[in-house]
Image (tube, rainbow, N blue to C red; front, side, top):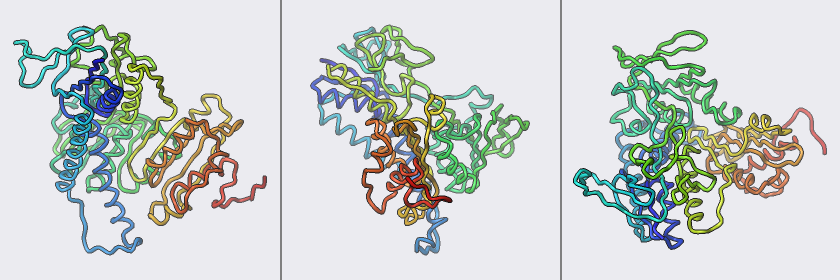
Length: 473
């Protein structure tokens, strides 16, 4: 069975490996770089920079408290850029090695549908007019072309000092000031990075809150930390225009309080991403799209039964780990295996300080869905390991069904939140109750103990939390 996979990101290369494991003859086509956005200009390089900013934050605020005396320290942006490049190169090389190890044919070039059973691959050194492109027949195809940054129709957004998340990772130097349009995950992560390197950062968000898709109780500690560190945040604010000025770029905004201008050396557009479908010629294969994304069913199958679409290009949840899961689902479906994804268990993470992590329903979503909700909240401030680490900002919050005790959502702000959220994902997948979490022994001393304590807190019985009145069962 011949399977063509278009795109070598975390959706495409994972799908390719799984297909090869199941005995398919696999060809992977990538037009830019293996690893896609995630490894090259997304998840990995961003987290490399964020790790260094976290260390800088510790040195700035906590070094003496932690018993560290330094005469001098500073962030070295050029060296950090070299480290970022080194890690990317190593990971991309690892992907290339995995493809070879699994017998997968890799072709670098742009894939274009000829019809529903043929793909034409155009490499940079090939002349399409002279018909030098490679044409490949396939039994099944999986489209995994990812996404690209949205460029909003703001006057002045085409100025050379207006950048996207793709280019913000590789600036030659840290700008004196940066205006960030969009206060979502990407915007807040870049705000943390550049602020730590001495850049004056301003976030402009059209919605009433930053990181609007997460529970308010865990976003609050992040917002407070950003404000404390000198980041200006304007919510419920719309950007009207961007103009060149003596101070760099002037961003004109409007809100209920009136018009305001913000001046910055560079402006980062961080308002989201959209599917990348521009080169595929989907019409020639008869593939349907809607609102700029490929239409798929629950198995990632398009309206053309032997063609699938996974990851960002189908307009679903635009996260690398979701793309990988969808790739495995598509391949296993093609190969006749029973496979499924429980989309209720998708973790959402923000790698700032404090880290934010969320899975399942927020409190507001659970109430809107009609649940009789009970919540349990435990502060990181009284967790022993968090104290040891000097990272006591944050909370753990469970959202539960009052009638059954079933865990509907877990939301965390604090150290290691992005690692620990897997416990909540597994709990929701297994329809676990808070009683089952309480009965699970958690190691001491760990940040993970806070999850057990928050489970106890649902019924007001957190062991290491004082209350005004002792509640007896």
